[in-house]
Length: 300
Image (cartoon, one colour):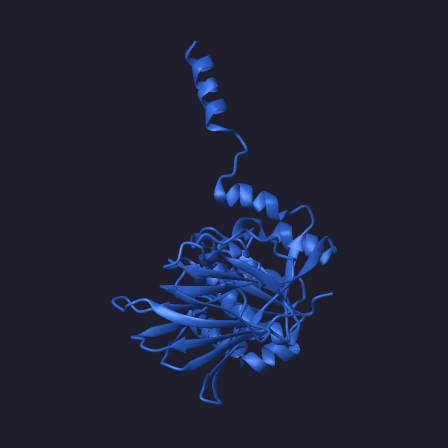
């Protein structure tokens, strides 16, 4: 089924060279052609496998992201527009998206070749930044878009509209605009909800709002968000997936909406979002009182 596979990597991960070479060897043993991103080919010194992002996107049947969730975010932003399935192999820590550990790759990939998997479609966001009426930047995000003040800046005022209707002026340290995929990241730390990843909604979560009545807001994927940066503002940053930064100035307008593309994530049969939550967040389902009772029985 998969005749050509593109590979992206995190160059900084310990052991990335040996992992990548081992992966290439395994795929070639399966008669699968390998295309490497330019940085991956340079890192492992295989220039003959190096391809442009466009060539990988147009010729691959599958993209493998070798690293952590951060590597997966970059991979999704690059290749989701090509509608290619994405598979994450986890060399990182928490790993919500890169669920397959390196030691289980062969076993897991064999299941994929046997068709024992599903493809989850994940909402992505498109952000356009305007100065007056001129579009100056466009970004894609899988996780979230964050507007935040600089380290020593005063609070910022974000005049916010949803589908043309005025919502509020967020007087806060910032605002997180998140997909369901990103609901377990920065949005969660601001008090936002955990959202099932297949839902087609967008979450707005203020960062340290200076009005106690302001709470996270969930809207439809069909809604379009428009945010005006109200003066006076010091240094304000727009951050995409925690990886791309862009400085905003007074009277800039940020427009956020559902992207034309979605990320296609490969999930093995038997995996579960709720199981991942229990594992990653330590949701044992056992109360503190129950644990104390168990301790008393052991002591007795």
